[in-house]
Length: 263
Image (tube, rainbow, N blue to C red; front, side, top):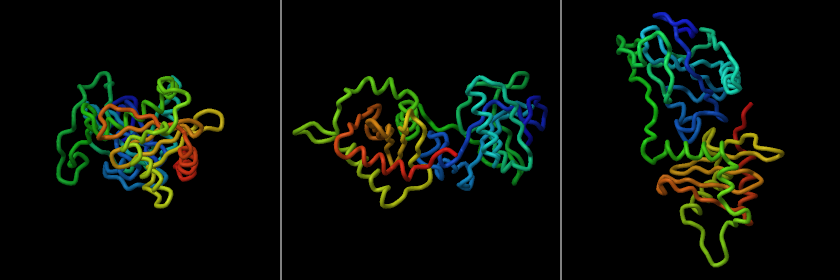
């Protein structure tokens, strides 16, 4: 199914797109890259682009291309408010999947409202169950990861809410048991490297990096030159700060060395 700006029965009207690589993928889909690829894709290290749109009948489709760099260019242009005609070479199309794996708030003009395709014949494109966005209405892994995304994007706002001299643990106190477990599991990644994308590093400012680590039931967001925040499935809605203290700086530095980074 080719991508096109002018939809007809066999074309795709592109609405949005995302990159799916070890260093950059929609966190809502999983704690790591292989988990995010459970749309039915092999965790190909070079990654994919997911192009979401509607066909001429209004049906939702996700076209997967192995030209991740093309999709990255389109997303960067759109983020800057620029127009970019995302035209996918059919030779790079891996598969066309019914449905959308993420929530899309817009719809194509001039076609019926978004809906899942009718089931196709056995072995056809729409024979599989349509993709659907993860449930983010209730606290759980998907919402926890989205919360960590928000902290990474709005770091300055969250940082303002924490004392500048916050330490890992005040004298005479014990750290939150869940936070201690998270830090121990994150430190375990140094001895047993986790799946691709479980730890990711992105540009922050100056020489600092924004570090993101996830694990079973937890997410950690940090700046390598600052503190960290922890979110856990078993602490609904809580954002727990972790001061630098004597051990956090070395942990963050070590995690950053093994983190996946955007190309």
